[in-house]
Image (cartoon, rainbow, N blue to C red; front, side, top):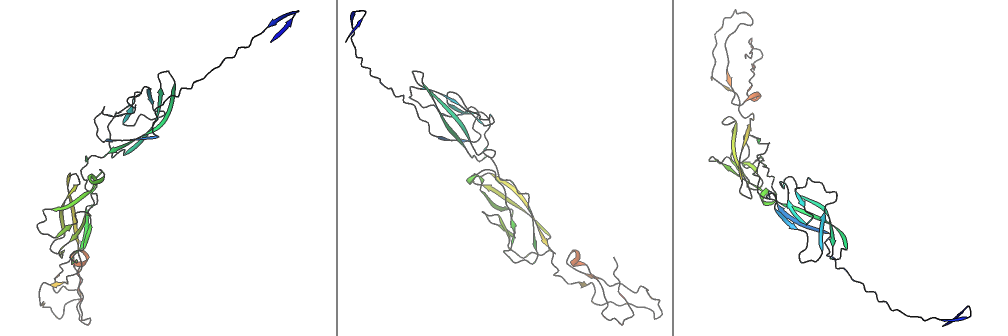
Length: 285
């Protein structure tokens, strides 16, 4: 190529350059969207549950908990170690999740962020014995049918699974008057009860959970009186002497009857069957 300027000829030369651009792909460790872990309740303070940082990696990792409250019983260090920071009680907290941000930095200083959720499940230990129920009084009518249900004895166990399953048995039941179902706690009466003989029974129930923790409980079974006894005279015959000239309202004698029932069923009132008789019966307290 030639060019003239001010009558002079100048020469130019074109030079071609070839550039090649190479792209280097950074291999970043990928965290799953959720990581699930389990830890037993009552784990000692400082127990290391896991380390979130992958091993055998050339990158550097830093972990953060954005907006996570500090009342959770575990902590996550920037290095990725997850450890027990306070007492863990499954009966108070069975499960919780913590949002985590993982910052990955490679050897050249390039960084990237990944968000995932750390899920913690608390494993139950058999640390609770069965508790006696508040409802421990039952009633059953006398003259019952053998096998009749008295009620359900329902103890409480705050553990879960087999540790929270309660089994029942009666203690000191030599008379075999009552029976309790081992699994359901249903109490049945096996014989015919008589209020006039026994008004109430105290039974001892042994509640055992699946982990063999035991508790002794007491239940009271009250017998309801039925009006199954007629009044009985204390004599077969009463004889009174009186004058033909007595005044009205004069006391002549006392009739006495007894009733084997109780309360209103045992209240007795007297009435002369012959209305034409010149006498009247009164009830005296």
